[in-house]
Length: 245
Image 1 (cartoon, helix red, strand yellow):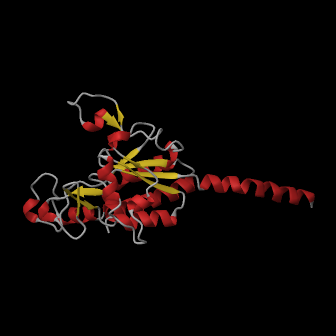
Image 2: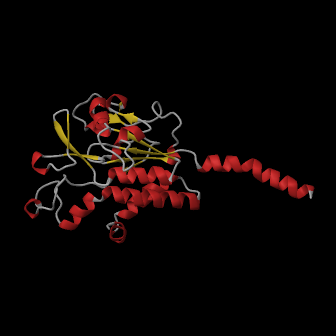
């Protein structure tokens, strides 16, 4: 009898530790330009287009719904934004886009990091901006864990190891509707199917993040490693057919 009581006591002692480990933060860090927001030409304005500091922007389709779903289903997730844009621009954009529950992206953001938070590696302006500047989290999210953090960015090279990054999957300029007259031009979708995938990229993030969380939990592998693999597999034709709904 005493043995059973000791076993029960032992297991109860370790339950809070296991629970804490399971709910240790998962940090999803989103870029802004060409990831969560597009710069928009005046001819492509619609009812979701925002005018901020004299320029037109539009949030990626389904952005608010996807982020609310992640936060509701996975309380361990913290959503942050890290952009090389100016702080005033970034914060104004984020406070004008809302989740279905009425909160803004600014309201739910764990951290909003901007140009002033970039780590400058070089002043050589002949180098690409993402080569001269890096997104480093140590000073801004002190408890971040490289094994449980991913940056989603149209330029993954912004991430400085050990931070890992995946491509935002967006390839084209924003179009209200598919325009066959633009298929030969750079940064415009070559087919209506590609246009549809561009418009649904946030839904792809949701599916792949949740698949990565499930696989990391099942396998014990690092979330960041699993997410990198999931993103790479998407590029295969089979996975594109699975995720392109």
